[in-house]
Each structure stands twice: as structure tokens, then as C-alpha cells.
Image (cartoon, rainbow, N blue to C red; front, side):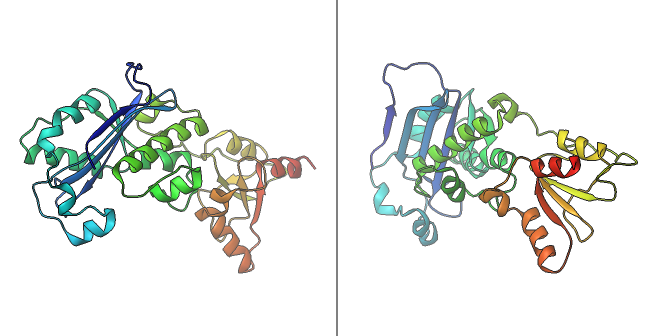
Length: 286
């Protein structure tokens, strides 16, 4: 594989909203980068891609090769990280850079040190954290499973494909939540305390967990106004799990920890009910 850099539209010279980087390493030393993939995104679309194999100037471990398929003979004649540092710096410096976990951030910093190149100053955004916030009820936020769930074409442990998939996770998270890129860069807001239940109402005596909204959100406020007590998690005293939105419930809901715990308590003879926000409103009104 030769180094490649490609613009989706060669006449498009506007900067990206964010770039995504993924690296593969030759051995346990994170500085041993043997492949880099970078994809630029603007306005919810890809505008450029860059990928290259690298000679890591280090040994190849058989374990790493089994993961990504890159061996020592694949990188003969390829540039070192020092050779492409300027290209990577040009794509990342001063921009928002996405990586799926901060492994790539650490690998890039280590490679700069080992190859005696200046650190690349960029604003990092972890797409794992974004996915956890956008789809909190998924059982896993690994990139391969996210790509499958979101319908993203993906070849795992290929640096360019991984970078592209992580970029589309960001695009889809923005579309799904309405949270803009700048807001994702800010620390997530910690939910405040649950509202106190009204002294009376159709939900008096109910201990209710909520799935899909924070405990201080509008759904919690409506439940508390009807006399229901908000609990932080599904337990053996929970009487109801309310799911924000309408049934039928999708994959992410049915495979969430809260939903599965409620189902387990039901199988063991518990009385916890699983209802949608819409069904709760109908029940409270009757």
C-alpha cells in the first residue's frame, strides 16, 4: 500500500469541521505506528482522506499482526513517522481531532517523542464518550458494534476504515441528539437531583426508574408531579421502568442494562412493569 491522500472534491479547499485519526501499531509500544488513516468531515460529509503504511522502526509482534494483518514485509520502503509528521501535523494541528478512545492520542504523542518531532497541538474528542452519551443503552460502544448498529460500512483494524467509521459515529450522534460539535467538546452535564414527588397523585407509591432521559429531565418532573418517586436504577423495590418515547422498543433499549434487569426481576416474580412514556401518560390519565 502506498501513501494516499484524496479529496472528495479536489476544488473544495474549505477547512473541515473535524478530522478523525486512527493508527495501528506494530508491537506493544504505542509509538510503533505502522499505519495511519485520517478522514476530514464538514457539514456531515467526508471531504478528504489520507492513509499510509509506515515503517515503525521497531519490531513487529505476531499478536499485533494477527489483529491488523500488517507485517514487517508490508512496510519495506514505506516512510517512517518522522517522514510524514508534517502531513499529519497539517491535517490535525489547530483543529478538532476525533479518535475512538484515546489510544490514538497517546500513540501520536509517543511517536512524536520517539522520532524527535514536535507534539501536534489539537483539540481531542473521544468518539467512545460521544457514543456513550448519544446511545447510553447500548450494551457496548466498541467501534465494530457501533458500526453494525448504525449501518456504517466498516473493516475493523484498517486505519482508514476505522477513522471513517468513527467520523460517521460523530455525524450520526449530532443528527440523533441535536447536540452540536462544540457542545460535544464541553464536559458532559451531570444530572441534578431527582424532583421530589407530590404528596398525592395517580402514581403515589410507585418507585420509578427512567430509561432514555436524565433523572432531572422533563419526564421525571411529570412523574414526580403525579406522585411517583424517581429512583436512580432498577432494583428489587422498583415498581416501574418508564422508557422515554413510544413503544415498540428498539435494539438499544431491549439490550440495555436497565431493561434486562427489569426483565430479570419479572422472571423472578417481581412486579416491576415496563412501559413507554406514552403508555405512562395514558395510565395516569385513566
